[in-house]
Structure formats: structure tokens, C-alpha cells
Image 1 (cartoon, rainbow, N blue to C red):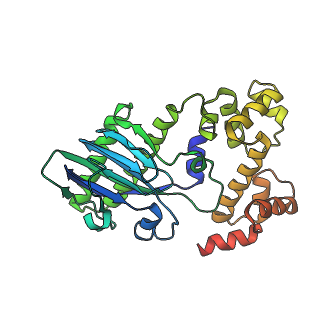
Image 2 (tube, rainbow, N blue to C red; image 1 turned 90 degrees about the vertical axis):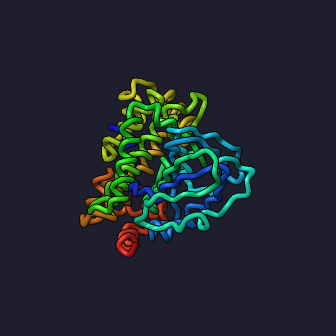
Image 3 (cartoon, rainbow, N blue to C red; image 1 turned 180 degrees about the vertical axis):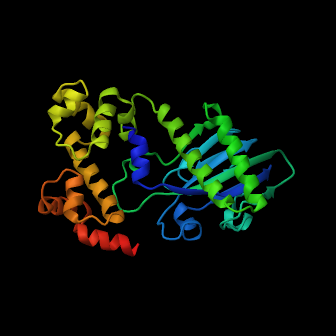
Length: 319
């Protein structure tokens, strides 16, 4: 089981490119929080993750409460929680609010030009929205900002060519160009994420570190691959080629909770998704995630999400 793909499918990642910019030194732009973009770019979303890829040139980026980070051509920087930030050729230049530089709207990827008469930097920006409500271990594990050198990855040339193609399609206005840009944006996000995971230091803790650990990663794959199976800690340990005590300690150390607690939360996250999209009865949803009775499932679901499964389904329909 590919755990990362399973989680990405579960949270229903949605995204698109929204800005194609050519900036000339000196320049500095203040970008607001993703939640400020949400009503424009993705109505119904509460917040958006924001991504920038430097296609040409170089620049700097800084969260308003963080340290400056240098970006080179081929770098992708992601703000998974939509934090406001500065981006520019120099961060000591007086920043201009983004809405004074360009009127952000969709679909519109026409090239915008901004800045002075100096060296050129080309930046493409994208947004991403996660499914609301259900448990999202990926989003919880990501830092406020991370950088990935996508150009150095095996898929780097393909990613860049795809972005340039999507921008050309958008400029042509041909039917389907918006869908092309959306798919390219999602691929860019996933590739940046994969690059970041591969560079997570061994000393780091969290769900992403658990994916990379041989025993914990195997345990996660088992639970995601067969969430309805009657797993016990002993059975998981046996399949992961570990002892119960070692697996429990290592899993809790990296993921932040015991294996069986994680399994329970993931089962309920799967159930929340099924309730949103399936017409199956509640008992069938319960059975699909390993519960033998509707009563025990309903109690567990209400404890996790604060509402009964039926009310959750009604709320999803309204959303």
C-alpha cells in the first residue's frame, strides 16, 4: 500500500495555478494568508496552501515570523498552512501588497510584469485545498514552509515542461486549458512533497518520518491497505517483522500516538469519507472500516467528530 497516495486520495487534494509573474529587480511583494485567497480561488474552502516555483532567476522568501530563505531557478517553496509571507529580490525593499500588483482571479494565467529594470525572475504560483472535516495526518505533519529542489529530481524536466505547456495552453484559451493547469499544479505539489519527504532528517519526528522508517512505514502500509481487518498489535508486529514492544515504542515515538489509536482514527477518517460519497447504510460503512455493530461505530464516530454519522452525512450534503 502506498500510504502517501492513500492519504492524498482521502483528503481529496484540489489545486490550480493562479499566477504567472515576471519580476524585475528591485521588487518585493507581500502575500496574504491562504484564507484570504480562498473565497476568490476556491469558494467553500476555509484556507489554501500556497506554492511558488521559480522558473528563472532567483529571489528570497520569508514568513512574517520566520527567517529568509533563498530560492534558485528550479526550486519550489510550499506554505502548506497558507501562512502570509514576503517574496522578492530583496526583503528589505518596501513590500507591495499582492492585490496592488495583480488582481487575483480564475481562470487567468496571463503573464504579469512587475518591478524595476533589473534582473528578471519568473515565478509561477499555485494554490491547494484539502478536504475539510476528516482527519488529515499529512497536513498536520507538514511545517509552515518547506522547499524542494524539483529541478534536481528525476521528474524535474517533465514538471517544468508541463508547467510551460500549461501556461501556453492558458494563454491560447483553448477548451480544457484550465483543467490542464489544475492537473499540472497537483503534480507539482505532489512532486515537491515527495522531494521534501526524502530530505526529512533522520532525527525528525512525525508522520512523515514514520513513512520512511522500515518498521513503522510497514505498519502504516498494513493499516491503510486493510483498515477493516481485525488487527492486533501482535499481528501488526508480526507482519512488520518486529516485536510488539519495539513496534509500539517506535511508532509512538515517530507518529505521536500508539498504533491502535492511529488505526482507530484512520478507520473513522475513512468512514467520514464514505459517508460523504456513498449511499450505503451506516451499518455498511461501519462494517467497511472494521466495526461489527452500528452502535459501537456511532459511539466512536461521535467521540471523534462530535456528531453522529447521520448528521455528518447531512452536513456533508449541505457543504
